[in-house]
Length: 600
Image (tube, rainbow, N blue to C red; front, side):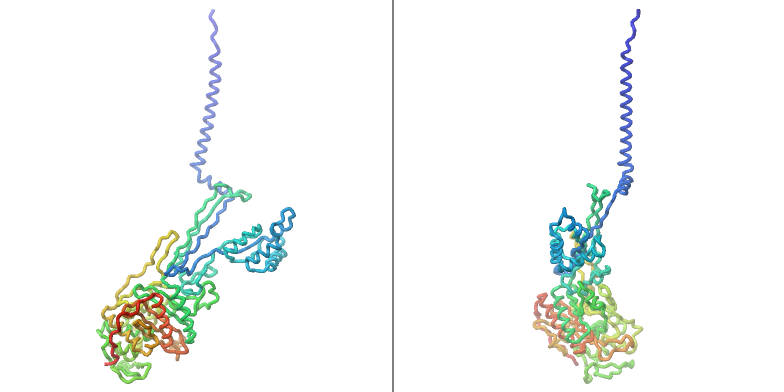
């Protein structure tokens, strides 16, 4: 009999198949999870993140950077941004704490209000009344503004009180530590954000780049850990000016006094460094305090130095001299004959001098020293109108300076075709065209610099938040007059300062001075005719003549005590003296050459 086959192998295969099947199912599930995980975290990651943010209570807050500083040539801060705090409180929260018997505040409102008041400069009664009025109007009131713009020191003292219902809100404000010093140049930022002056011109350097902070919160306002993301703000850059604050302060005080003494509407002083063209001071009266521009009249908030144009009068007789020296080969001894009045010229024009004198054989030097309109008119006939026009343009008439200050006037110079029989001659002594004080300074900078014109500048550099310094580009210096002829012209202008009627009033002991005055009539805008007895006076000069370093221009608008250019002499002498003292300029080391003759 054949034995039965064993059933054990068949029975053992069934559990193994079940195990394999179970493992397969588990592996399939795991693979499914892996596929889904890759899809969630890789393939569809961006979409899922966006969806999660949309479903969460996401918050993004801007972070303000600080607007940059404006500093003078020595680093003195003229404008900066500071944090101030607006102090607000929640009256209903205060009331709830006061009425809750279980959690009485450590500092009751009666005492807390006194402490708050002492810190913010108010009375306790005033603070309590303000809060009480708010609660009376609305028992659930959650907002009262107690004080705007408190300092960081006040904020820290308030925070130390540890009052849960007190809330400070920080904000940045623009402050000007030196007040009105250079205020007309710096400008200000109005409440609506509009900017004036250098605040406007240098906005790209000064502006901060906003940052932002974002995070996710739960429905109850709790920040979800790890969700915070921050892009820091970048502070604005620092603008460095060419201005010297101490000199600027002195000149503003001085021109204020001189303007009032002379009964003038306004006065200005402009100081330019000969070798660099840098404006070291631009003082004017009336001025504006950028901390409170509303306290000044609207017409006083800009810069008259750049915006006011005027006929230069006798100051530009030096440019007429330059034209006849360049195009007619004239020199200091070249002579013409001229009387003081009723000189009738070939084209029928009648020219007069401001003082009575017989017919003189005026040298070119003498015509400048005596400031003879008649003689300059005759010298002007030695060259063509186009040549004199070209000379005026070369010396800057009709073009803004390289500074291009907001509101800067370019002055007016009429084309030669518009010169009539009278203006053919009046242009020789500074009429029928207009200039600004910086243009006058620029013209004399070129004369003082040996005939090389260096474009004026007011801003030296911008230093960004990372410390990178970017120099402000300026046009290259340009030779506009022959050096040898320029030396002779400079000698003539020095003779004006020494032999002219104001010589004693403008001398600075130890220094050789070159100077020329200007008395310009003012036109009546309604009639086009000149106003009777109303003048715009000016004086320009440089020192030391043997090694010129600084040009000074002084203007007075409609002086009434002295109506001639003599009105500017005291201010010019004080300004030049202070400039030489401020920069410790060495006195002249070579004596003046023999005086030039006025007549042949």
